[in-house]
Length: 572
Image (tube, rainbow, N blue to C red):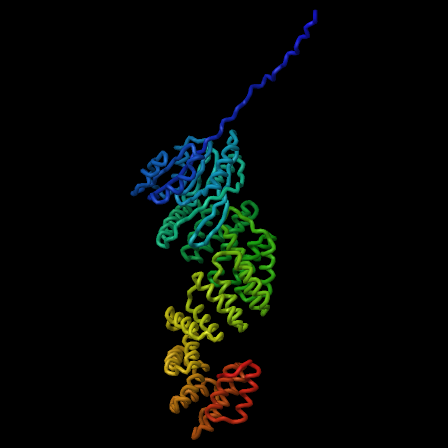
């Protein structure tokens, strides 16, 4: 009989099995008259939300009804000029483990919803983590900016928003010892573009901030928000006084690094907007001495140096800026726009330094970096126009105009480029368009006059030239053009008048007696000689040509040929 072997008893660990349920997520919002915004804000997120809490501060439209249809719990809240009070009421009404807060003009695209869904599965049950998202802000003041903002946090005792306007919650979370984590979730804030609405909001916010400053005058965030609001209202001098409350507090340099840097850069920016470049440069150099290697600081210093006319130092700082990574912080920064201006400003520096090939290279690079690059197209157009590459200039001006840069200056320069190419009909259209936008655009008037003169449409040319002289009586090219026209029309009275005015403009003796065409011809030769002394060879060629028409001599012909050889062409 076989011996039965006893099985070994398996001893289980005495520790109980643990199971962690998924943490719930509440969406919390405060709204007023957002019937047009609330559906595109909430609807894409419904699949990841366990609760929707909407605090209404006094809507008179269908906001509440639409919110309830979306499944929201809606609560009335009497507005008291305190955004934090309203936000904290939304927290009080919420029951979720974690809270996501949004404004009605926020948008969460499908890929970002999936990221929130994945993050939700990893929410710790200890509720010891909160999460920054990247806000892509569409601001009519700053353009498209990016910054980190704490939008997702655990619902725990003592966590509250602070600040009556531009409210924040990260301070109380940090005091509670909750870890703050950056995510790659992007929320688009579309904002409000109507100028009247923006001004009304700014005035409301400024009033709230000023009242809060009376109670807490040493709060750096309040001074920062006051400065930003004032600058948006074009009150830069007052904005600077608030920023100084931050930059002059040296303890903030170490304790609140991002706030100190941002305040310094914005204060410098406000000085630049006021045209006080030396003060801006001093501020940028000061902050750079403490925080080396910051791309944004180098750029701001480079731009201020460029505007102050120190092109060599500007080129150095802008080049350094390009070689560094741009850091996204808690404060708004338009990264795409910054990258664009790094290359655009560097191109302008090279242009001023007569390094034309380098300038063109930078402008071409900048075209790829931002959708609003009409300035680069205009710069490339003018660069080619000055280099007498008229076909390229016309193409760049046409592209700039197609992209919305329909200015009288651009049409005027386009007309000049087309005329130089021999496209006279298109040139006339462009110059007329410039004058349609601005009837006083001087270059368009003079160039259209010269165009008509070249086409022998003398009456039209006279009208354009006389209109130009009303604005600028000393235009030598216009008076030389009129001189030739009046000679061909045998209008000696007006011809002598143009000659006399040119002598006066050029400080040549006028006490002459003109008794023959020979006398008049020699006077125009003297005019050509004086203009030549001033280095304006194309204009001197016009004067010599008029002299030769009036009284042809071998000496004047020699002047025409020698001048034309230098300028590269004869006057027709």
